[in-house]
Image (cartoon, rainbow, N blue to C red; front, side, top):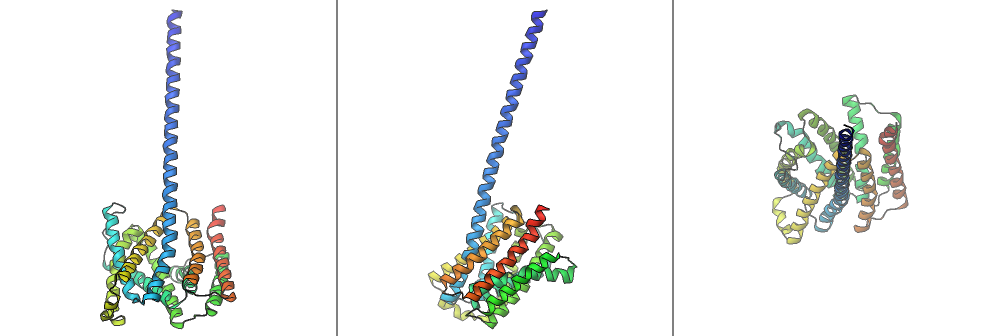
Length: 333
């Protein structure tokens, strides 16, 4: 009897040990799989982060090069970029990167007008302003969004956030005023692009909530509609007969490359916003701003005087203050 009991106890202890060893092996394999997923996620985050950083800097200097060195018509380049983006989005949809969603086309016209206006006037601003002035005036988009949201949507903002835009505005004003290549028409285009961009960002947020779609699904409608809308205006401002002189392999290659890089900028922005924190996205933007200004100044021989550098530093001080009060301090609380 005692022998049977001891045999049962020994067999049960063996089972317990085997169960514990199997459970520990399962835990180890699960941990290894989790580590692999983390490594893979970190790899893709770094990869897309790098694409966003490099493409954003490249597209501005590439477009500026096409305008300055080849005098390629601005609206035509913008229109071609829209259609290149559309065809690449079709490829992404076929690759199952995003799914097609049926949206009411006529309701997409307002956001497409704002999208077209924002890109067209941004490119005109880039053509007629220095890279530094172009980039600094773009920083006024956030306060413009806040003002429009406050006027029409009764949005409220804390006093530190509002006050942080004083150095942004003053620094941009100083840097633009003392720009050696100051251009009134360029300043008008830059200001208009800020208004269109602010309206576009507000509409995109509204459309995504109203139609339950993501940014790429919305861009799939925006890009061709904006291209078609601009197509009506191109003949009035840029005669088609003048395009013959631009039909060289070098210029065609640069134009197509600009469209492809512009697509990667849009695609990577949507991924970064969706997968990284708002702090990370803003830090990417701020670091790019400084690098774009200094690279543009070097490539296109646009010297920065002492007053412009002061305005640039004062502006970036305000931008970092905004980021601190908007995201970092809020996250710590």
